[in-house]
Image 1 (cartoon, rainbow, N blue to C red):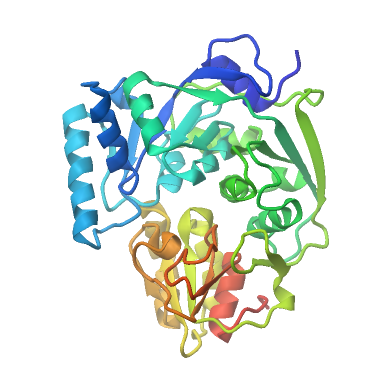
Image 2: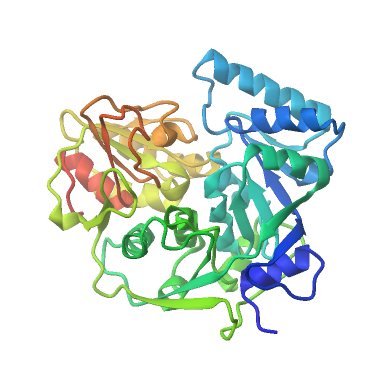
Length: 415
């Protein structure tokens, strides 16, 4: 029987020869991730179950990234709870306040390989499907079950394959592609679907660019985002992980497969406008004054984003009245930015460079916006109140548009 990538992965991990969309399976979990914000509730629920030891401490990954270093007594207490749990359970894959954003460091540090089922108490866990895994966000109480049993039930999703063709123009990036797709299908257009990204455009993208696509699958309701494994994937994994893996590809005649063709030849830079990610417009149509620019997050805080922004900002100054926060997504990205002189460019331009973390993305830490202020962000969500005041506005763009706009003081195109 023909199957999609998701169906094949869930069949393997639930010890079945085949699965089909709509079927309920109990799958073995390969990697379970929780962080400092959602982890304490997972631990509380785990303790209520009464299980003394987690099923496999080597398969649990715990990074601190949302409120690091602690910005309140509550955050400090959450860190204490998590550190105690890590010590009691013998969890080796623990990354304290200095490593970076969970969805960046898991693949960087070799925790993600093809054919796995990866769950995390964070909706953007779907990022890891860029390496050919079935990766999805779950609730904190569901994670307590995973901690206890190493298993979780799933309804096998149908699949939408976005066949993306064309050559991207200068200053058009993966972020523009995914914003354009979300704008077309809507915030609920792929609800509980596996979103596969395929075609010549994706084949030409780097692994980092593919992460951008998969990261934002959830913003159109997707259960996960996936890209088929190719030589670029294998080279990325070769340098980072020694775990065994299985490569799966979608059969084009799979019964549950829907294909949507996307032509990006004429695509221009895109911006998601308040207060929904599917409220997407070409950047050229906007003339919006901004108060803050945020370069970072699990969507666009990678070294390629730092380089793109630095190239635009070099020798320039950020506009008066604009705050720009630059937050590399991981220690590795931060170190590369230092070694390449990118940090100097940002600082000389007038930006604030912060430690690797989620920053203002979730509205729970540094860089919040106040009433009436507008933020242009390279992150993935712009819901009302997402980055601070509910009376503020958040726009989403690529790193290039963010850097160019920081110079002009208003949303503009990179020149």
